[in-house]
Length: 256
Length: 327
Image (cartoon, rainbow over all chains, first blue to last red; front, side):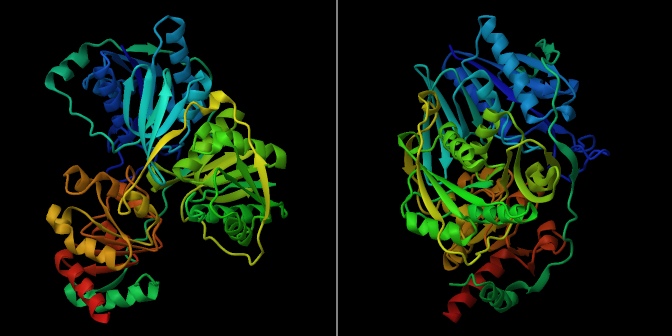
C-alpha cells in the first residue's frame, strides 16, 4: 500500500490576460479565476495512478490562502482521499518557506506513524517559477528526489521515473520514501466524475496553522513588459508573399 | 570570483548555447563589480577538452574546472551540486551562475537548498550589485520579477536568449582537472538508463536554429505536410501548440509553450497560431518570429517580427515552392 502526498498550489489562471495585483506582488486572479497549474495537475494524476496501482491512498496538500480549499477539493474529486490546508498568506512565502511547511507535514505524518512513501509536486509553480520547492523539500526531509518526471511507477519499494533529458529519455530508480517533481505532458489528467465531485464535498479538510514564520522571497515587485504591438513588418498577403518571405529567410541566414 | 556551471554535450563536446549566454552575463557582472575573475566548471564526461577550453576561454572564462569521478559520470542533481559546491569553495566564488535549463535549474536548486540561501531562476538582467538585484521571468515568461539576492554566494540561473553570447577574442582557458568524491547518499537519485531519442524529437526542437510551428489552423493531423516540409528545407524542427497535442494531432514532445518546450531559435515560423499567452511564453525568446495567419489582429501577428496575412495552407506551400525554385 503506497501512501502518497500530492502538493498543489492555487494560482491565477493566465489563459487570458495577465493582470498583476495593485501592489505588484503577484498575479491577480480575481477576474480570470484560480486554478491548479498544469504541472501540479499532472502531479495529482500520477499520484492517483501510483496509489491505484499499489492499493494506496492520496492526500492532497496546499500551502496557501483559505480559498485554496477549492483546489484541494478539485483534486479530491479526482480520487484523492484526504486534504490538508496549511493556511497562510501565500504572498509572504518564498520557496524555502513553502518547502518548510510541506516538510513539516511530511515529518509530522512520519512521527505519527503514518509516513508518506512518496511526495509528488509540480516541477515548477505556474506563477512564481522558482524551480526549487521540491528540491528544498527533499533536502529538509532527507529523501532522494527526481525532477522533470513525466511518468511514475512504484514497484517493490522502488520509484521508477521517466524524464525527458537533454540527450534522450532517462530513467531514474529511487528507493522509497522519495520525492518526485512532475513535469506536465506525460499523462493526461483525468476529469472528475459526478460521483467524485459529490464525494469531495463531504471530505473534511484538515486546516492547519503554519509551522514556521516566513522568511520571504526577496521579491521587490513584478512587472508585465509592454507588448511589442503593431511592430511586425508585413511581408504581404497570401501566396504572393512567398518571394518576400524567402528574401527574409536569406537575410536571416536560415536558408540552407 | 564568479563561477559559471557550463553544460556540454557528452558525445560531441559542444558547449550549450545558454552556457555561453550565461558567461556573457557573468562578464557583465564582473565588469560592474570591478573585474573579478570569471571561471567555468564543467561536470562529467567531456568529449573534447581542448575544444571546450577554447570555446569557454573565447567567451571570457579564464579557467575551466573539470569535475570528474564515478559519482558524476552520469547525471544526478545532488551529485552534480556536490561537484559544483566543491569548486565554489576551492575558488572562493561569491556568485554561482548556470543556464536556465532543466539541469542548470536543478543543480543550482540543490546547491541553494544545501547552503540554505535564496536562488533566482531564469534571470534576464541585473539592476545593481549593492545588493545584487535581478529581474527574472515569472508566469511562464510573460511577466518579470525584480528580486534581491543579498546572501553570498548569490545563486542564479539565466533564461535562454536573455543575453547575447559574445566572443572576447581571448585564447583557451586554463584547464584544471578536479576529482570529486560524492557521498553514497547523494548517488541515490541519478540517471540509470538513457534511451537515445530519435533525431526528430524534442531534443532537436530546443536546439534547432529554425522551428516551424502550427496550431489549430493546421486543421487536422493531415494538415502538417507543408509545415514538415518547410522545417526540413530549413534544417529545423516542427513545433506545435497545446491544442494540437491535446487533440492528438501531433506528439507532445513537439509542444511549444509554458508547459511544453521553451524554444529560442534564430527564426520561429508560426503558422495558424493565434498567440495565446501560454504559447507565447514558449517562443518569446526566438530571435525573430514570422507569423502566418488569416487574422491580422491575432496576438502572434502583432507581436511577430514579420507577418504574412493569409491561409497557412496556401502560404506555406508557396514558400516551399519558392525555396525549391531558387534551388
